[in-house]
Amino acid sequence: MILYATLSLGFINHKQFRENIDWTFLIFLASMIGFIKTFSFIGLESVFLENFKWLGIYMQKNIMIFVILSFIIILVMRLFIPSNSAVIILTTILFPIAQTYGINLWIVSFIILMFSDMWFFPYQSTYYIQFENEMCDEIYFNEKDLLIFNGISNIFRILAIFISIYYWKQVGIL
Image (cartoon, rainbow, N blue to C red; front, top):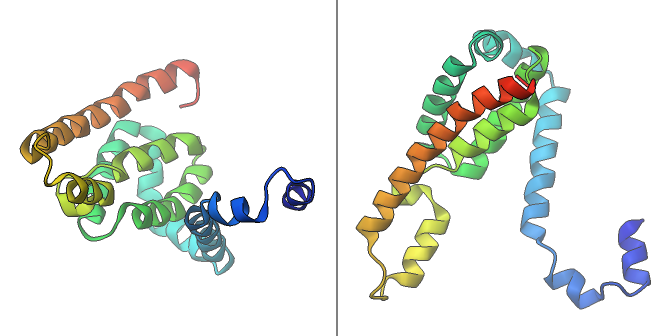
């Protein structure tokens, strides 16, 4: 209805509709939602709950261990699969577990997104590869410095999550 009203009232024209909407992201988002709903519909959600019960217990009883386990799991996954795929797989598995054990989904999302966006090897980051291709001839580009900066930012991501745990406890969402 909103789309129809927007188009018919002229707030956006046909050309803008085709060119200015991020269709790739919308298709990705729809696929992710469909993937999660399919897992739930065919009953895989209960299989995950049963097989990953131990992970849910760590979520509930000792969030620090859950964060460390999440980091290791995501680190291994990201060696083989891209970030977007890792996010879909992890949300499909971890969201039902978090809901069952009463953990705020925002916290689980934050952890997944922070860790899945980390990269240690250039092939793990599509935006780094694109940046490198664009800047390879520039005199200002120093790959070694950029990789060192990335390593430092990865350390800060890990520290940010551990610091956030104390904050989440203080505000009562954990």
